[in-house]
Structure formats: structure tokens, C-alpha cells
Length: 391
Image 1 (cartoon, rainbow, N blue to C red):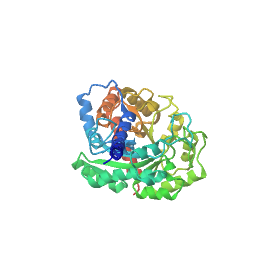
Image 2: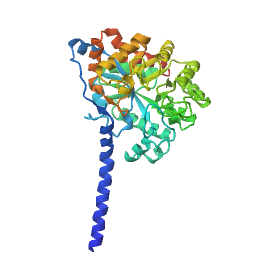
Image 3: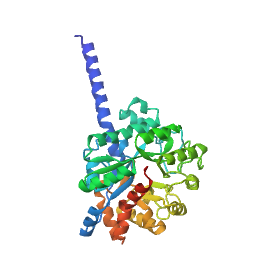
Image 4: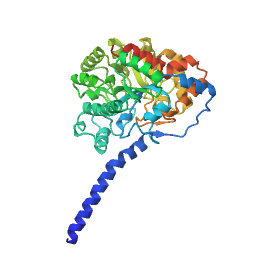
């Protein structure tokens, strides 16, 4: 065989090997570089905290874990969440949110709707199906499919909750099987509708029970807190909310402009969620809306879930997270506060989901009662779901 042909074959093989290595290893590398755990002073765990933590029903309203190419049945030493770590942390209820678009150069002040999209790039390197490359709805459905596969393959570990009856059955089953995890599905922004109201039904039929309205940019429903317009709800946005609530989809106003939140409060027939946030009075970050508006959400029996990263709590350590929760309790009452980690959402946090006992200890150290801790850590989430999931 001529040397030139041998050389071409060797080159082709090397190119193929490089491509295989890139698509196998680069997504994990990107995950490791994006979803971080930082060094932080963690409290000493007391016997009281261990006993209390074991008794808690723990729930988290926001995690973007489905975005990443990670086998969730395996325990990882990077990222923030997988099924073994959720079980280790005694988590009962986990809302998994689907990210479908994220602008390049993302920031809390101002992002263009037309900016280059990071999720398109992630979809390509992670070998998502071709139909996800130019459809945000298909991206949401693809990520949801990962959760549905877990439910089908590992029913002894994972259960999908889409209704009040399924929630009641899950609670009974978990008493016999404390390792059982209840998953729920939500969107990170309603640009996932691709501008088509019919996609609300498609997402509902695939298990989605929470939808946020905006993410880091303005969309067809209205303005983002980090967009360019500062506008409120559009006519399309009002129609979308009416459709969501008629089906029993819970509305999340995280990332929405204050005007959007006010408009939703004025028209909503259900209490609202803020699935991952902080309080402006505790952390004056452009990520957090005003305390007055938070009080209005709570006055309508809404639920406000506190996050663990710098944009929400300014100093992302367990003490400041606990202080943000205590601030929220003092502002709106303990029955309106919950957890919204934003795990695996390109955040750096002081503990992963297996280490939630540190937050239980920090709340005890701040003087919260065991009843308040039970409410915040998951009791309020359970109550909200019992009231507002479809019948």
C-alpha cells in the first residue's frame, strides 16, 4: 500500500478518535468548570440537627441538572446533584427545570434577545437530537425525557409527580421506602413555547407542572428583569398564563420584571411562585426584586424559594443563606418561604444536595424553631403542591 494512502488512513483515524474523545469528555469538562463548589466554613453538626434533619420532608423548587450530560443514577464528584446525593441529603421533592436558551455574555443588568445562545452550543457538543438545535420546545421535551427515563427504569428510586393523587401516593410509598425521590418538571422561561400557545399543552402532557415566564432576556410574554425593555406582560403573555392556569400549571415569576410580576398578580387566579431568588433587603443584587413586591406575592399566599448562590444571597455561604431565609421569614412569614437552590445552573455554591444538613444546622444556630425549619425545608413546598397540582 502506498505511503500516502497509509498516511491518510492514519490521519482519518486520528480525527475520528479526537472527535470521539471530544464528544465523550468535553461535556463533562464543561460541567465541572460551570457548576462549582467553593470552599466555605461549614458548621459543626449537632445531635439535634441530625435528629431533626432525618425527620424533615425536604423539597427544592429549582435545579437545572437535566441540562448536563450526567448519568443521574451515578454519584459524581462534580456538579451539585444526582440521585444518590439527593437520597443522601434526605431530599423528598425535587423540581427539575429545563433551560432552553441562555445568552452569551450573560449578566444581571441587560441581555439582548438576539445574543448568541449558549444552549445551542451545549446541545451540539452534547449530541442532543437534531430537532433540538432550532426548537426551544424540543429542548425542554428532550431534557424532560431524561427524567422520564429515570422514572421508567428505576421506579424504586424515582417517581414523577404530576397530580394531587400521585403526590398522595408518593408520600405513602416514601414512608415505606425513604430512598424514594419525587421529581417534578418545570421550565426555565416560557420562551420554551417557541411563541406557540399550543406548546403549553404539549409540555403539560409530557409532565410539566411549573413554568417560569422569563429567563435572562425579554421574550414574547414580556420583559425579563435582566432584559432590555423593562416591560410588563404582553397580550400573548396574558393568554399563556390563562392557558397554564386552566391546565393546573404553576406560574413562576423568577427572572421577570417587577412590572410583569405586578401584572401577573393582578390577573392570576392562583398564588405565584418565585422558584429561586433572594431578598433585596438582605442582598441588594439586581437579581432580586423589591421587598414590597415579595410581600405582595406572599399576601396572595405565594411561595418564595431562597437560592444558594451569590446573585441571590450576595455572600454564598451557609450562614448567609440561613440569614436570607430568616430575613424572608421576618418579612413575609415562615409559611411563605422555601428552598430554591439553582443547583447546576452555572452557579458556585457552598454545599451540594447531599450536604443539606449544614443548612439545617445553620438555621438552628440562628434561633429558628424546629417548626419553622420544617416549613422552610420542605413542608411549605408539600403544602403548596397539595393545593395547586391538578386534581
